[in-house]
Amino acid sequence: MSNGTESKVFANWKKRFIAYLANLLWRVLLPFLPWFFNEAHFEGLYRKKEDPWNYTQSPYEQEKYEKTLQAIPGDVRLVFEVGTSEGVFTELLLKSGKQVFGIDISQTALERAKKRLKKYGNRVTLKKMDITRDEPEGAFDLILASEVLYYLGGRNVLLSLEDKFFRHLRDGGYLLLVHFYPSGKLIHDLFLERKRFAKVSEEVVYHPERDYIITLLQKRVLEKEEKALL
Image (cartoon, rainbow, N blue to C red; front, side, top):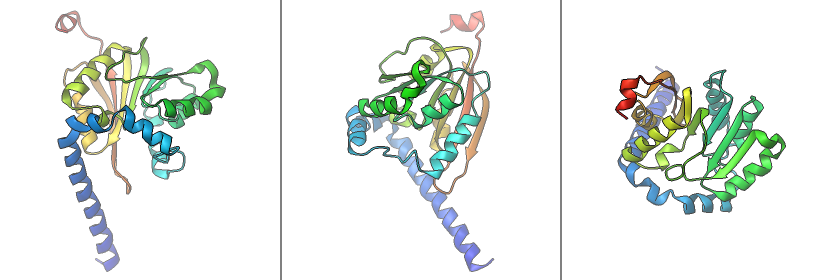
């Protein structure tokens, strides 16, 4: 093995090890994150800088967006997007023919999203909402939660969201989850615990910048006996 190859292998091993430690830390801190990542935090972030995560320019984000779009089933028309931000991915959904109800906790982010998406008219609805406390209206073909659930809290919070998402999906509707890996796997698996969702597909993407996981779940049509247990 050449020195260059050895250096590359070591660099990849180091990256994986750092990612493992970072994800382990996220797992430990998960229940406490909402104390810091609250409305004031995100509002301050957006007021300080437009596009704070570089969604519009980052090749990593663009690749992840493309893979996320590819994971959406063809029969989906109405999408509920949790964490719309400034509407970058929302616009890709609209360009692909979807109708979108998007929410975010930051009013500043939503104002920028409204400007970006104005030309799509009534095909997009944007609303300031805290998904852990507020209740959306209606039933959707697909609910999308991408890089957002780990900000919201621990197991109890996520299981309450499982219930909320289940209630606001049409029968046979989909839940699409995208988060960094391997912590994202732990989050996604929580939505399978009650057996009200079935896994349709799952892809782990190993990326030089950061690994991530895309999981597509489908709402099960429950039998009468199962409904009685809810």
